Amino acid sequence: MGSFIVALIPINNKPSIIVSKRWLQFSILGIIVLSLFPIIRLVLFLYEDIGLSLTIQNVIAGFEVGQAWTFTLFLAFIFYLYVSIFSVFNSKKHILVSILFTLGLILSLGWASHSASLTEWSGFIAHSLHFLAVTIWVGILIVVSWFSVNHLNWTPLLKWFTPVAIVSLVVITGTGLFLMTLVQDFSEYANSWLLPYGQALLIKHVIIIPIIVFAFINGIWMRKRIRLDPKINPLPWVKAESGLLLLIFTATAVLGQQEPPHSVESTVSGGGLSRIFGALHNGVITKPIDASMDINLIGSLFFILTLVFLILTVAVFVKKAPSVVAFIMSVLCIVSLYLGLMNSVAF
Image (cartoon, rainbow, N blue to C red):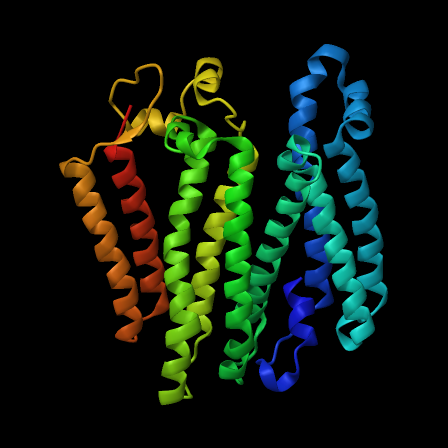
């Protein structure tokens, strides 16, 4: 999505960007392969009762996730042929058709989502909007950061991309909160940290904090710095931000493979605790499960470290140090905040 949106932008409002046809083909093949994993997981869960071949047929034909993947496979195959035959970036018509193909794939993934199976329409719409906003914001960021051959026209780029990123973030936040309510009550958010699903969700939320800091640096402060020094290269900083986004995608991928805790207590009784939680939390868990924050000395120290690493992330930019140092500080901020929360929660 990002490459097609950027291709529609006038050349004087973006740096020089080259995305080869091969990258588009790999991306489409990646969609086919990665969207297959929920099918494989479901088949492995069911095949012992009726056999592998019959299970595959039933999952593909009888489950919504299987039907959605069949549609994804068909649409992605046509899309692959389209980008292979035509030079899509050389024609506005081809770009718009490619965007329509991408929207179709996004809707297909929304159809296959767990949230879509919980409601008639709202879960499907919310998940599709959530994923669409992610593909727009992150897609543009990745294309600009990794496929730009220079950093010309960076200020004009920020003038249109910053509002797009803000709107996308608002949509992601709103739809994300709604999708959470489909799986669990907000009151059980901390309780879910006992489970692999809750751990993945917590890590995902913790990663968001330094991403917002990087977004502020790249969207606001970088513009001011470029005015003072037009020769400054912002590409390493947006690459660092894309690295953090890769971490949140990893957490999201893990989250998608976990059992959603519609009832934390029953899920704990049936599946046990998260291994990560068990390794970090030594306290006694009593029933009924009711998590509360009990900030102690160790937790306080980790929270202080979180603030220190966050300040250092900004200081690296102010002092014009390499962006990789800011990335490391951000990762340490994530680890510190996570450990602070794990050492402060009581059951």
